[in-house]
Figure 1 (cartoon, rainbow, N blue to C red):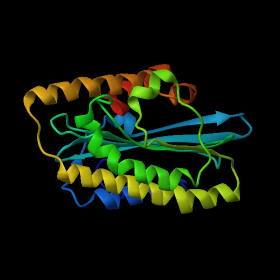
Figure 2 (cartoon, rainbow, N blue to C red):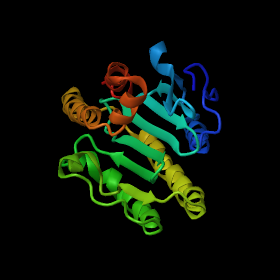
Figure 3 (cartoon, rainbow, N blue to C red):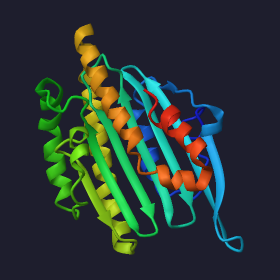
Figure 4 (spheres, rainbow, N blue to C red):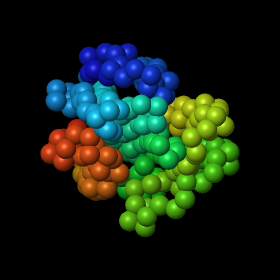
Length: 254
């Protein structure tokens, strides 16, 4: 996916392309402009597997920005039929009382890991969270009951997730494909629609409040960059130096 066009995709037969298209349609009501990504990180290709049966692995990055939103960033990985990843993070400007939007859709040889959340910068601050969670929790109840639980999250991660965290693990089979299309995709649309409502309703905060939000955002971004679960996989494909630069300068660049 290139910076220059919302519809421009590098990846062929990408499992999560319908979700990307949904996202683009939903945010297109805003006045979107490209968010600059260094050329070396827009597209990367490597080969894995044996010399006799090499598997092409491609990683593609797309980003934009608009009023109230510092960055919308999508990172995509595709390799054969069993590796397909869409990682979406929407980072708001710190002078608005908005959470982050996070979506992780990961297909690996051992199954699907699927997560959606509106993630707080200041979890213990009711001014920051109450108006979000009051609307988010009914959505979580609606969709989580249709999905197996993904399990508990680490204690250290709890400050960066909301009680509306939608999280599941599914095996690789036709039934899971149906769940992804009939449950995960409409849940994604509804979570994103709620986030768009929050963006439209948000008002600029005071400088003092903006500084407090910024500190919370920095803690969130630092945690995400240090604990990025894709680090090992990307390092194996592209090397540690490229991977660390990609994580620090592109994926989590605040």
